[in-house]
Length: 381
Image 1 (cartoon, rainbow, N blue to C red):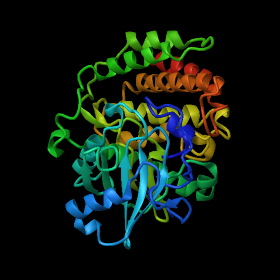
Image 2 (image 1 turned 30 degrees about the vertical axis):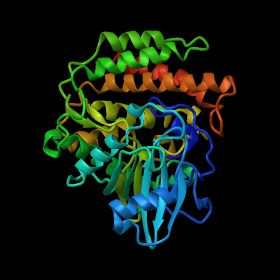
Image 3 (image 1 turned 135 degrees about the vertical axis):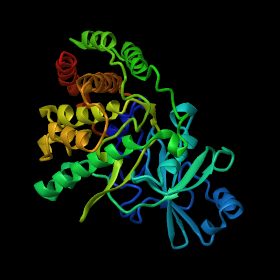
Image 4 (image 1 turned 90 degrees about the horizontal axis):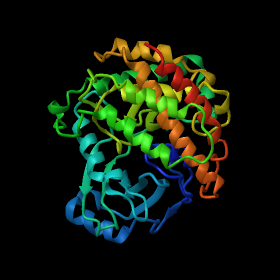
């Protein structure tokens, strides 16, 4: 959730800037003592304390301390200590941002709506839309016990059995999300499912035009194949997370379980196979490529890291979902196209010296295998 290179792969994100937070920590693991400050960047604790006293006095019963635990150009996440209680605060990144890309009300709405369902989400506590309180809208949620798993150092010690259990729990959770009827939880107007897939192709084609810095064999052919073969969208109208992957989950490993799905800033109503296709792109393409070795985006997941294959993930999902996975090959091709465009944009900015932090120097190597795999997937029937 906070690794700079991983943050940079979020749809629409730009390379992350170091904030002083330890990128290995999450909103639910041991916060430690380092990094806690009287007034951390992006958070005015005095004004926040007064706001809580007026609107949530149960969260204002003691000294207020905070630690930035996930930073960058994605939404900022802080661990708040209110006396003996710990909660999590989310706000947009510092500086000028597009409200539609960092909509606190959107995240708060979806986790609130999903609370009574089988989808594990942090408990929603408070939404503040007033930017005058801390300089931006924000919301509070419960702290959930668990860990964000993204590196081989974290996943290797699990062993084959627990890695398999974790992967299957991840797929069960995705199927549970896609089984939720949006209108039944008040999300019937959460997005525009009609034309969702065609808009995705157009969006990333436009982004490609702004990301070119070198010859990219095959990427235009991939774009054209996707545009010419957009599926009918028989699955349209489900809740889509938008960036569902292992390191956007909080999990425990003893026992193995997904405790919470995080980072709902890209959520909408659309085709659920978009989630599955992008997940499999991370899993089988990045996680299965030799270029992923040592890469912070994909080194700790997929078959190379000892997890089950993508085919096994699909089988698990299909057995617990009523979604027709027939057009999945197209969605995997779309996932490859999206990540290839994002990686190329990051590569270009890295060549210009505009990326800060580690892990960006090898991201350009992932473009070619993504395009090749996408072309293969786009040609399947």
